[in-house]
Image (cartoon, rainbow, N blue to C red; front, side, top):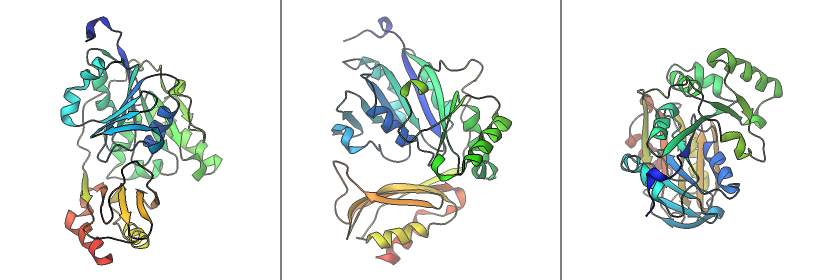
Length: 307
C-alpha cells in the first residue's frame, strides 16, 4: 500500500467542449500516443465509455484496462467521491484526464483537480468550428456554450476539414471577441501531440466556478425489436430539431452491430468493432436535447413504426 501524502500531486486535465466537438476522438488519440505514461481517463458523460476496441486489453464493468497500461472508467456520483482512490493504484498513475460531458461546465468538473493528491493542470475545451457560432447564438444552449469557452486554459479547434480556411479565421476572431485572449490551437488530422495539452498549469485567475442549470434533457432508447440499417437511418433522420446529440450501439438485422453518432443534422452509422457488441435485436441509443424534445414515449413510438 502506498502513502498518498508521500507522493507527488498527480496532474489533472479536463477535456471539455460541446456535444459532438470531438472529445472522445481526442481522448482515444491521447491514449494511443501515451508515450509511456500511465494515464487514467475518467469519462463524465451520459453515454458509455467509448474507447477504441484496438486499445482494450480487458473490460470489467465500467473499468477498461488498456494494453499500454492506461485505464478508463466512468465517473458516476459515487465514483466522484472515491476519485482519490486512483492515487492508490499500483503501478501508480502519471496523470488523470477527465472527458467532461458535452453539456457540463468543465470548470465545475475541474474542481475535482483540487482534491488532495491532485494538481489541476488545465482545462482544454474543444471547439467545433462548423457549429460553434450557431450554437452560441441559440438562446437555448448559447449560455452553456459560452460558459465552456470562458473556462478554458486552451481551446482546440476541431472539424477544420468541414469549413473553408477563411471561416476558421473568422471563428478565431469571434473567439477573441467573446472570450478574450485564450490560447488557441488547431487539431491536425494526425492528432495533437499530448505535450500541447499537458503542462498548462491552469491559468491563474480562471476560477473553475460553480455548476449552472444547463436545462438539457436526456433519454435512453432501447430497441424492443430488430431493425434494419436503413430503418435506423430513417429514425435518426426523423429526430426532432430539439435533439442536439445522439449516440449509441445497435445490432441491425442486415449489417450486424453498428455505432451511431448524431450531431445536429450530421449523422454517421459505422460498424461496431468493439469486443462486446450488443446482441442481435438489441442496443442502446442515448438522446440528448433541450427540454422541449419530448418524452421517452415519443422516441419509442417512432422506433416501433419502422419495425
